[in-house]
Length: 171
Image (cartoon, rainbow, N blue to C red; front, side, top):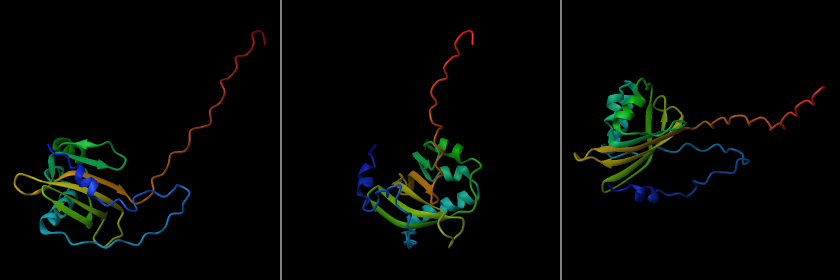
């Protein structure tokens, strides 16, 4: 099996570095959607349809047999059966839009945003890495997503207390 690592290296990394924690958050301008070729557009529309129907089996069929789901705050899930089990009962309103895409040979990707309905402000973003199946259809190799709201950091652990000294005998 060929590794899609070459594809990942081809994604422009300019501006990907994270700002220092002390830097103020700057409101980003909304990114414009891009039009996808029909075979890539099908991936997004089929995903929306299956998610809205809460159809975990249909969702899992959009993935390569060895595909991954890399959801924010969750451990990785690998393989169609595990993906179907992980998506059991999941779903609801969803609108996907593409921000960028590329294809080359048997691999491609779609970078995008998601919202609860078309035209709503994105509530998160995703990266789909795709591979052409034997039938020529694009299948998801990796679905990675995360929300746009900053994650709350857990409170720091209490300061370490020195061990209590045992009382002296007879006191």
